[in-house]
Every structure is written in structure tokens, then in C-alpha cells.
Amino acid sequence: MPEAAATKRSRDSVRNTLMVAISLSLVCSLLVAGAAVLLKPKQLQNEAEYRQRIILDVAGIAESDADPAIAFAAIEARMVDLSTGDYVDAPAVDKFDPIAAASDPELGVRIAPESDIAAIRRRARFAPVYLVRTGDEIEQIILPVYGSGLWSTMYGYLALEADGNTIRGLRFYSHAETPGLGDQVDKPAWRSKWRGKKLFDDNGEVRVEVIRGAVAEATPGVADDNAYRIDGLAGATLTGRGVTNLIHYWVGPQGFGPYLEKLRGNAGEIS
Image: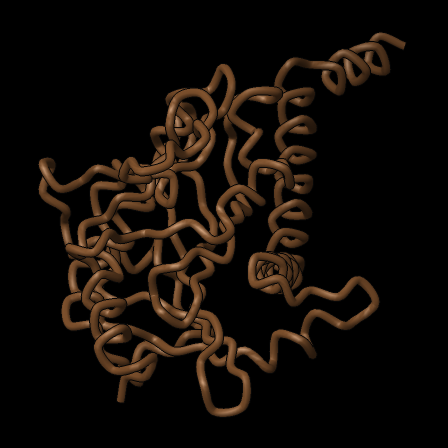
């Protein structure tokens, strides 16, 4: 009897309890890690399909009863060298991660603080563009854009007419702005206000901006700047300013500016 009691005490010792707990933790960790590895390809596929739906939506060609993959296959994806505005064959669009590339010493560049109006610090040397064509002619150009809002980095797509200046739409697919305030960027009513606005003035300066308050009615006989103005976000001035800044950066000289300039100078085509 004393031996049995001693054995029981040994089994109930702190050491044995810790060993069981550690073993269980290791098994659970392996199961979780294994599940994450197995599910990663599916997660990446889901993310890619979601972004495709956003691109189709911002272009105004999404159809609720159509397969997004089939519709997206009609969009031409090209890679652009941001420094020259030229198309390049590598890296491949479907395997390119701009955020990872931005951190790569060879694929990314550091943005000087005075130029970093989007507050992203680094960017990739290359970026994809998505072309919607009617026959052989470009109808729309869709550009990936991102930058800091109030609380988060906002990732989205900007759709432009073939002139590279007239906006067709803006849609964010990822952000963490304040619910009920900054997340107004997702509201269809606000997004619709971008359609038809202009990026550049006659001198080629980037003018588009999210203002404070509502855009006023134009005054007859007075120069009208409303072509560049979008209603502000009530209670979310800093988010609106972030939207303005990221658009200015990505259509400016360090972003897609050289590409858009070539596009406008070559009647919508770049060799």
C-alpha cells in the first residue's frame, strides 16, 4: 500500500504534469502549423480572387451572376517600370507581391521623407497595371494604390479613362479606418463622387483632392475647380487627407506619373 501511494504521488508530481502540458502544447502547435501550411495556398487564392472582384467592381464591369475569374481573364495585366513608365516582361504580374518587393534591396527603393506623402517609406520598382480594352483600344487603366490613412494603410485601385486623367472610380479593398467615420471610403454614395473627376490640370499638376465639407456649386463666370474636388468625409478629415495624399503620390512622378504621361502622349498606347 505505501508503494502504491508513492507511485500515485510520483505520477501526480509537478514534473509529470509539466511534461504532459508541454507535450500537449507541442502536439497542438504542430497541428495548427500544419493546418496553416495546408490552408495557405487556398487563402492566397481567395485573396487573389477578392482583389479581382474589386478590380472588376472599380472598373464598373462586375456582374453578380458571372464568374469573376472568367470576367477578369478579359483584363490585360502588364508590369510597369515606375522609373521609366515602360512595360517590362519581368517580374511576372501573377507572382508579384509589391509589399514584399518594396522591402527587397534589389526590387524596392527607399522614398525620401520629403517625397513620402503617402507615408509608405519604401515602394517596389515595378507595379502592375490592368487594362480594359474595347477591341484593340484601351478603355480603362486600373492602378493599384496604397498609403496611410488615420489608423491604417489603405490598399485599393484607381480606375481611369483612356486619357489617363479622368477618374472612373476608386475602391479600397483593405484598411482599418474608424468604423462609422473613416470607413465611409467604402460607401457607394461617396465612391460615386469620384466618377468624372480629373487628376491633372492643364499644366499637368496633380489637383484632385478630398476637401473638407461638400463641394460647392460652381459660380458662373468664375474658374471652376470642382472638377478636381471630392466631398470630404464627415468626422474623418485625416482619412480624407490620407486618400488625397496616396492618390497624389501614385499618380505623381515617383509613382505612375511617367507611365500616365507616356500613355497620354501616345494616344493610349505604350509599346
